[in-house]
Length: 85
Image 1 (spheres, rainbow, N blue to C red):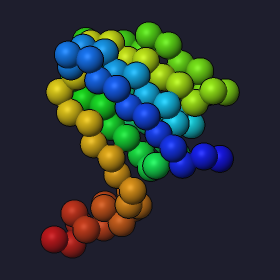
Image 2 (image 1 turned 30 degrees about the vertical axis):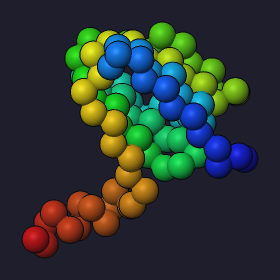
Image 3 (image 1 turned 90 degrees about the vertical axis):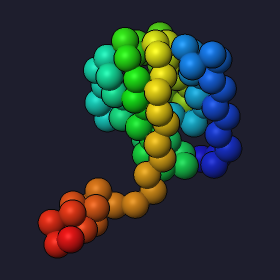
Image 4 (image 1 turned 180 degrees about the horizontal axis):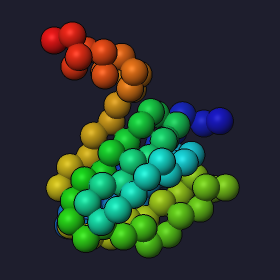
């Protein structure tokens, strides 16, 4: 699998992303994805998945995009860090 990824954001209203391998969860405020570069959390308002093609690793999201956050660490590790802080 290629580690190349292309992300294009247009006026914070449309996001096109290549490299998406899975959609973990989504609602109108958050979309949690697995990509070939790690987990990606898209946060915003009125988010809609306009196009999803996991075979070709492509995703298009529309809405008001506020934040994009990559997480390459383990979720379990983060939970333990929070508990023992």
